[in-house]
Image 1: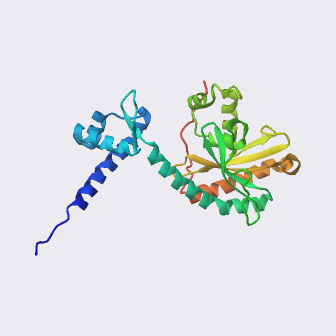
Image 2: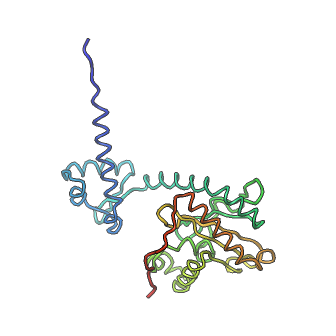
Image 3: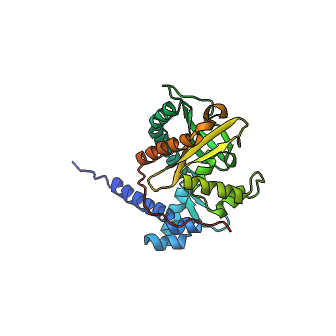
Length: 265
């Protein structure tokens, strides 16, 4: 009897390893700073022939794993890859944050919200009360980032140039004023609003960071001013401690020193 040896698996594994090398190159600091890399540079980085790189990139682009800029003809990581990562990250974020939010809401006797940044809006992923149930009124709703305390902590990593690109033409809030509010929130460890989003409503938010130290979400407490207004600072500090707990569960380890921040000019 003739024994048939299956050689396809090692070959496929080798091809997958090559594709991963390409994706790692497109995720490098060089690629992120430049906004993409061309075939020639990618061939240099991974040590392969340009024709091989070109064929591999075309196949990855067909599946949405990478994208090709029609003007520069350079490649960058694609929508499908980011979509997969986002779904996984948000799922873990919600799973880790929910029990902490229940404790926070029970402590303050107010509803808490888990928020993320979506373009120029703040989107609520999860709302819970201090009881054993979820509150769905805000989930999935987007509100302007510049009007909310959550928006101000979610924009903590943004540079002045990024703020101008995102909000410079909106006209609702001048970028220098928004920058000042973001810096104030960074110094305090939380942001607060007093009837800026809605008459009679106050709120506080604190940043949730991932293992890299980047702000990926905000914990928010919002309530009528008649109920929360006099203890807004206390609520801010309590929310900041809760957000730090979520950050720790996501792998964040606070550093004693940080790089100097950008300055608005």
